[in-house]
Structures are given as structure tokens and as C-alpha cells.
Length: 449
Ligand SMILES: [Zn+2]
Image (cartoon, rainbow, N blue to C red; front, side, top):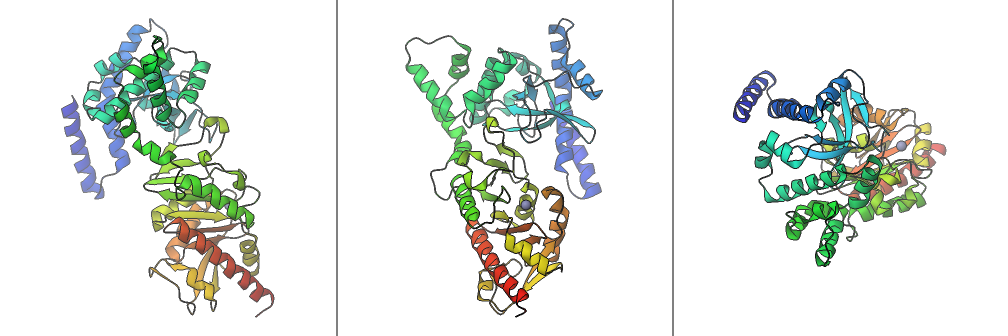
């Protein structure tokens, strides 16, 4: 079955290649699910149907959801979810902190918001057809033998087994207890906290045969655990002064003091290795803490977020930040609600701003030539019109990037500015140079000099 599935996938890819000239990852992903999971999921559902003695089954649940009835899965339900190349992974249906919803329809496709077990609080929206009710480890391995191959790498095997153990431990609880236990046990760290627990429990003479210790003891190898969580630790590390968890709060305090991010306005994002760190939305920027940040990858998939109890949501500027990363290979992007930008746009109704003859132009990087400007060159910065929501600026922002390949900033009329650089230092110094240039340009315009 698995082999024939692979063959079919290859044929579909060939067809797609010849028709479009390239393979669409999204379609490939869906087809992979269809071929690799469809049969297995039918089997699981059949198995669970038999077990459920006539109670509502996953198949019924899925059908119900498809019919628009969303009562079959609810907050706190344990599920198996399939995403990307990962093996089927256990998780819990929990409300999305950004939208406050746990289910939605996207393009008529029903989806649920899932937090994954033993995965540093990773979460995302998953299509309902990729989700089924949670069953035990033995059942899932019987029904999807492919998992054994998928977790053959030792690191993934340890992580998957711990995820399932945690899920089994959580599944035995009532829903309220389950959710609070999920967050209490492993926020930001299946990692260090579990390692510490394991170490302290193993040194305790009287081991309680609790479900919690069962979760920890099987196949537990501290060294492997540390290695497999290397990525997460990198994301959490705030020892280095150059780590975004340290830099973003510090820069926000500086920008606040300059009057650029007052009244919760503005935002900042820094790329660190392959991860994008993003400040939360609608908060007092001078009070942001290292663990308030959101982390996602370059595809925009969430990797880590602040404790759900903080009820924070990711910066509204995120779609614009991602444009700068993807279209301009930025290393950091800053958004300020600067009064001088607003004043300048009032004095300059054109769709671009031209500045010449000032020394500080030398601090601005020309993205087209790959060099900083000379002071005798003309600096041209695009101005786009404001919109009701920050995310609605994306289209005009993209057009401005195309039309002005030299620019490292875009002004938004009556609103503020986005500025980026290859790293946080050049983003910051350019922001300072732009602000300086804007103040002088305002003076020149007002006094007609
Ligand atoms: Zn804004």
C-alpha cells in the first residue's frame, strides 16, 4: 500500500511538473496525506468505532464537522494530527490565542487549532481531515506501521515516544485539569523542566507509580533529550546580549524613549538563524519581557509563543515583516509610529519623498547597488496610503518594494514607517538616520529653505 502510494505520488508530481514547470509543495503535501494517511485513518476510525460501542465515533465526528456541526471536537479533546513530513503526532484542541477560536472554516475547509504534545508549545491550524481522535500508542502503531520507519532517527523516536506518553497521561484527566496540566508541565520546555524532574525523580527512593512518572521513565535518555531540544534551547537562550529575546525588549525601550513606539504603536522583528522573533501586539512596548516574544519560521509557521496565560497575540505587522524578510532578505524589521513621519507626509502629499544634500544620507543603505549612499546622491523613499488594518498594507507595500528596489524603508501616510536592514544594527542605525533626515526635511519645507 505504502509503495503503491509513493508511485502514485511520483506520477502526480510528473504531471504537475510538465503542466506548471514546478511542483507545488502545498498540493504535494495534500496528496501525500491523501495517499499515506487516507487508508490508515479509515482503519483507525473503524477500530475506534468498534471500541466506542455506538458512541460518537471519529468518522461521525468528521462527517458532522463537514456538515458544519462543530460540536464533535471541543476544547480539551486529545487528537492525533498529521502535519508536513512529521509522523502522526498527539495534541490537544486548544483555543488559538490570536483569534480566541478553536475551530474555523478556511475557504470552506473546516480546521481545528491544535497544540502538540512534547513539542515546545508548537501549535497550528490543521485541516479537520488531518485529525482524528487520540488512541493509544499500540493502536496507532498497529494501524499506521509507517510511523516506526518515520521515527527511525533516534532523536525523533525519543521525542515522539515522550509526546505519546505525555498524551496518554493527559488523556486520563478531565478536560480542565488536562489543559492546565499541559501548560503547567511544559511551557517553553518539555526540555529543562522535564529533565530536572526526571533527575530528581530518579534519585527519589520511593518512586510513585503515577502517570507522570510513567510519562518520564520510558526510554528516557537525558543526553538524547538535551540534543533533541537543542533547537528549542537556542530559541529560548537569552544569555547573549545579541539574542533577540534580549535585544527586542531593549530596543523597544530605546524607541519608546524616542517617542517612536508610544501608545502601544509600532513593532519589531529580528531574524536569528532561521527563526523570526516577533514582538507582541497592542502592548506597552517599553515593558516587553524576553518571554513575551513569538517565534516563527520563514514560512510563517509558529514555532513558539509566550505562555497562553499572558493572552498575548503576535504583532499585527507580521505580514509586512515577512514581506521584508522574503522579498529583501532582511535580518531585522522595525515599524515606528513616528510623529515626524506623519508631519512629513502632511507636508509632502506626493507618493514619494526625495532628500538630497545632507550628510546623514550616508547612513542609508542602497539595496539596489549594495552600497551606502554618498552624501551627494538623491534618496527617494516611497509613501503608501494608510489602511484600516496593518495587514491590509501588504499589497501596496509589495508594490512599493518592486517600484523602489533601492529603498530600505517605506513610509505609511498618517501612520509611520517600516525600515529594515541586513541585521538589527543596520535596521536601527538606518531608522535613526531616517528620523534625523526627516526632521531636517520638515524644517526645510516649513521654512522653505
Ligand atoms: Zn502601525
